[in-house]
Length: 517
Image 1 (cartoon, helix red, strand yellow):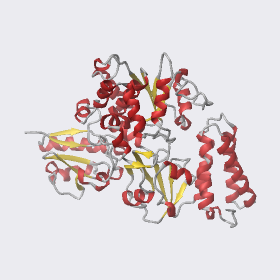
Image 2 (tube, helix red, strand yellow; image 1 turned 90 degrees about the horizontal axis):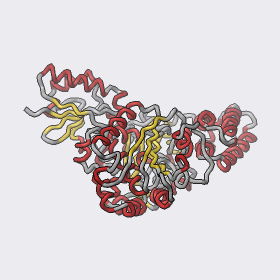
Image 3 (cartoon, one colour; image 1 turned 60 degrees about the horizontal axis):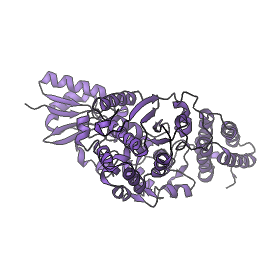
Image 4 (cartoon, helix red, strand yellow; image 1 turned 180 degrees about the vertical axis):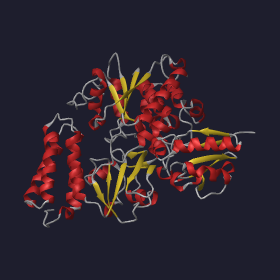
């Protein structure tokens, strides 16, 4: 009798709502009832609102059951779980869930599908095929594919990846490095974590391809310490990749040497900035460096260094496999390919949605997200993390495109979207932006360090109705100074959420009226 495969995610969000308990309950119930099951701990499909999402394989098709709790397991077995039986928790075939099938899965196509720590499973879904192809085609072909794909940095800055890699490749040095910034600290973001926990070999393969393309022999993953499960999964994946010959000396007989070290950060938000991260990797305080020189010229230990985020690097294998044209066919204008948008905040169906650039915020929030969890009207959405602008609901039809958002004084950033209903106090959100900057600033430059502290004080006076017109002028002047004179995006982008609140939600600075527009 063949064992029935049952999938229960081992991913931080799923575990936080009881996935481990569900797995234990399934194993216990199967033992008591004498049923043969093979329990597979997969990653997440990204439909966080359905977690824990349990799947049972029936005649080669996976049937999903959503929001399963440990207490539901006996009833599920009694209802015929192992044959896909009807139950109030039953959603139906996983490959028919609209939230998933209407996405443009590229970088996240294996997430939820495979057993994350099984190299065999990874290989069965074209894993490491891109690295083998890279070895056959040579570094120049890889660089050309990445450049022609139009891939831009998915960490927030949107800088063309191909240009960065070519610069490192062209710079003469006895040592070069690939660094992955996995210090995912923006509010409402979790795509890096889902990918690392659900498809860790995809990241390792992307980093290895990058090393081969630019001539680097060593890589570093800078992981935020707040991701303990991710750390455990990545550590095991690195060991498995070395044991199988996909990392280390003379990888699979190619003559290419490359290995990766996993480094834990220490909770500094500013280490999401590339030079602060490099300082931290070198064992120094995570403080922003002056530029130039750029990291591509003199980065880690003053050597040419590629700095990319998780999603950027993990997007590369299929660009090499399937070709630059297929990737570039997604998206609009200069925003090519797909982005993993993350829906959070006051949202009915929170989770990850990978779509090509060009859809609208309204489509994401209403069609995928289902509107607010409270059922109240949407007031705003903050896009791009705690330094992103607050977009009013009436502007939700602007296409999600890097340049289109820049034109409206906003940014797409890492793709995090935090939704607020009409009860939100936007003046307090503006205050939070300044307070967040004051707390997280590395302290190196005065506009960021002092400007943010003064910003909190000015907003407090405005909310209290003290000299509101004068304080409005002072706040605008302060934003100008921070934006123009800060050393990095920490201080330079803090004005984005503040300006957007002043522009679209000035009424929230009551008690008095008359704030100048």
